[in-house]
Image (cartoon, rainbow, N blue to C red; front, side, top):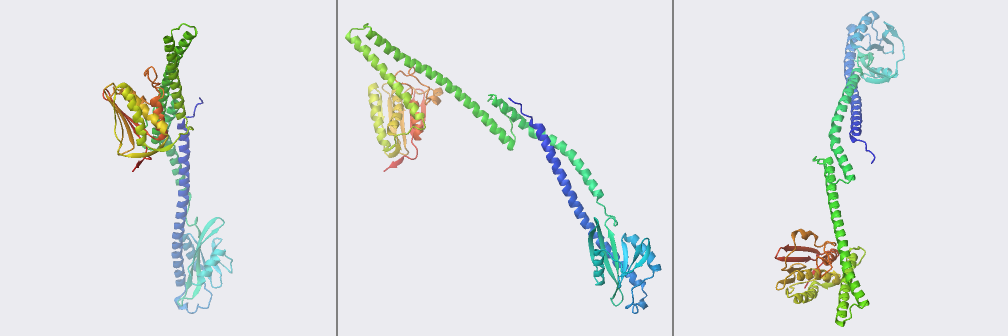
Length: 495
C-alpha cells in the first residue's frame, strides 16, 4: 500500500500560511484605516489651527494700519511697510510653520521670497491658492486641501478689513503636511513590528493547534489503515464533541458494522458448509437406498413377491422425499429472487384460518394431539398469495404438532382486535440459543428432523417477508411455543 503523507505537517503549514495571511491582511487593513483616519483628523486639526492663525494675523495687520487713517485708506492700495512686515512675517512663519502671504486688492503678493520680504505684482499662484484668494476677497474663509506633486498641501485665506468691513486684502497661509510636522513613518514602522511579532505568534499557535487538530485525525488515519487491512476490531476511542468527534464516532460505527458483517458472513459460511454437508448426506442416503434396492431387484437377489413389493415401496418413499426436498429448495430460491412475482388476490383471513385449521386438525388426529381452533370474532380482508400464506402457516402448525407429545394440545386463533393469527403448542419449547436461528435457511436438516427437509420455517420466513408479515416467536422450555403472524395494516376489518 502506498504510504500516505502525515497530515500534521501539511495542516501545520496550512495553518501557518493561513494565520500569516490573515494577520498580514489585517495589519495592512489596519494600517490603511489607521493612516486614513489619522490623516483625516490631522488635516482637520491643522485646518482649525491655520484658520485660527490666519484670523489672528489678519487682526494684527488691521491694527498695523493707523486707526485715524482707516477712512482715508478705503480707496487706496493696502500696504504695510517692508520694515514692519519683515520681522512680523518671519515671526508668524516660524510660529505657524506655514508660508504667509499678503495679497492686496490689486492682487499684488507680499511675502518671503528667496529669504527676503518682497512684493510681487500680479504673481500667478497655483490654482488652489488662486481659488482660496478669490474666496477671501469675497469675505469668506476657505480651507482648501490639494495634491501637488504627490504632496498634500493645505491653504486657508482670511480677509483683512477696515472699520467699514471693507476688504483691503487677504492673508494667505500655505503649507504641506510634511512642513506642518505630519509623518506616516512611525505608524508604518509600528505596524510592521506588530506584523512581525504576529507572524511569530502565528507560527507558534499554528504548531500547537495543528498538533491539537491533527492528533485525532492521525488516529483516525491509523484506524482507517487497519480497517483497510481487515482489522475490524480497532476503534478510534475519540470522544470530542465536535465535527472531528462525530466523524470518529461514525468511523467506530462503521468498524463495528464491518465486524458484525464479518461475523455474520463467517456464521453464514459455516451454516452453508453445514447445509451442503447435510444436504449431501441427505441426498446420498436416499440415493444409496434407491440404488441398492434397484440393484437387488435387477440382479434377482429379491424374488419373494412380498419382499419385492417392500423394496418398491422403499424406492417410492425415498423418491418422494427427494422430490419434496428439491421442491422446498426451489421454492426457497424463488422466494429469495426479487423478480419472482406472487399470485396475489383478495381473500379473508378467516377463510385462510379455516383452511389451515382443517389440515392441522388432521395432523393432530394422526398423532393423538388435542386440537383447538377459536372461532374468529372479526374478519379481515387481505391481498396476497393465498397458497404461499397457507404454506407459511402450515409450516408453523406442522412443527407445533410434530414437537407436541400425544395428549397435549395445539391451538389456532385469529385475534379479534388486530389482524394477527396465532399458533400455540404445549411441546418441549425451543432452546434459547436456537431462537435467533429458527428461520435461518441453512439451519435445519433431515438429520435433525427425520420427517421433513428442515426448510419449512425458512420458506415461511421468506413468504412473510414478501407479504410484509411480522413473525413473533415466544417459547419456554417444557411449556411450549407460540407463533404470532402479524399481518400489515393493509388488512382491513370486514363488517
